[in-house]
Length: 137
Ligand code: ZN
Image 1 (cartoon, rainbow, N blue to C red):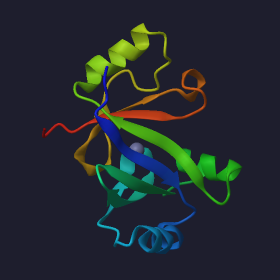
Image 2: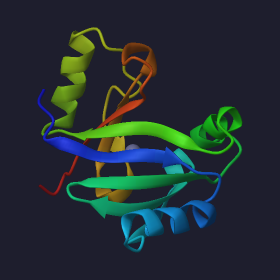
Image 3: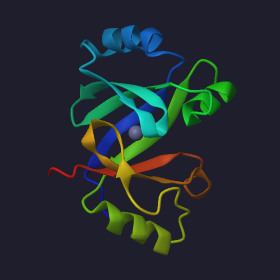
């Protein structure tokens, strides 16, 4: 496995309304996309900096993983780091073969039309790690 770049950094925020103005100021640009990902019970807002995006994540339900994260980190915080790979299923298989615990054994749909799979923080030095691929590339 050889990721090409950091696709995005996922940052949990109590609300997009609260988080977006700060990132618009910091990055000198407008948020270019807001998207709800029902399956993950989040609403996302995106910025792009070089090849890397900043993904703000707001929970849409009490049992959203982001809601649980915010219970521990009420101000918000870095939630996950996502690496772009070619061949996501192979990458997940390679990780599993290397003894890394997977959250997703098979890819699922994420925001921005990407296929995604998560590695468990137990195996990644505490950093929730996402692998993703663009199925249109
Ligand atoms: Zn993500």
